Every structure is written in C-alpha cells, then in structure tokens.
Image 1 (cartoon, rainbow, N blue to C red):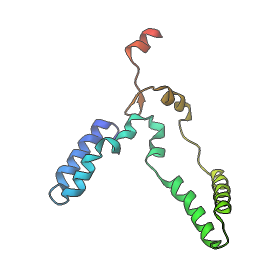
Image 2 (cartoon, helix red, strand yellow; image 1 turned 30 degrees about the vertical axis):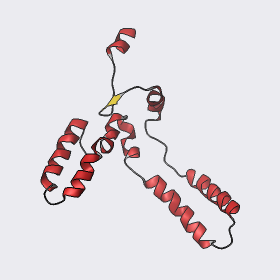
Image 3 (cartoon, rainbow, N blue to C red; image 1 turned 60 degrees about the horizontal axis):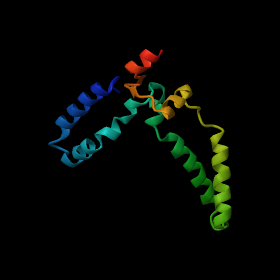
Image 4 (tube, rainbow, N blue to C red; image 1 turned 90 degrees about the vertical axis):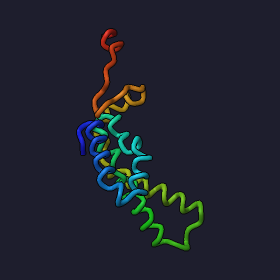
Length: 128
C-alpha cells in the first residue's frame, strides 16, 4: 500500500499501463472507479484498515446465515426478524473498536484529511 494518494496514483497508472492490453475491460472498470478506490486516503490514517476491510460484515452475516439455516421452516417473518436482531446484537459484543475514534468528531464537522493527516488551513492557523 502506498503512503500517499499521489504514490497510489502512480502505482495505479503503472498497473493499468501494464495490464491494459491483456485485460482492457477490467482496467477500464478500475479506471472508471479510480476516485472511489483511492477515497480512503481522504480519511484519518487510523481508519484506513477499517475502511478497506469487509470482514465485520461478512463474519456477522455468516453467523446469522448459519443459525437461520439450522432453524428453517419454523420461522415466521416476525420471529426471523427477532432472531436476526438478537444474533447481530450478540455478535456486536466481539467487534473490535474503531482505531482513532477521537477523529470521528472531526470527520463529522467536515475537517479535511489528506494522505491520512489533518489539513490545517490558513484561516485555522490565524484563529489559533
């Protein structure tokens, strides 16, 4: 993984150049979604590993899927909702806490981040 968005852009361009002739549709798809693929550089560096993984979603729903398969046929719509809710609430107890949770208020208020670091504007420096 590149340290900065600029380095990631260079690696991205190199990848596309290398594989474009062999896999034109795949590289076109990647180029179309370039902004979204590199968007995590606009968040605090502590959050990067959380943004790039889908494991919490996958493991939670694997538990729900496993349990509901075992009890198929004996669930109404309402009892299925209740069981899924309870299973997710129970799975929530083992989730890892978010690294850099102190950065969340900054994100909510619109503070900009570049390459994982907070961007301090001239107006903020003057106010301090």
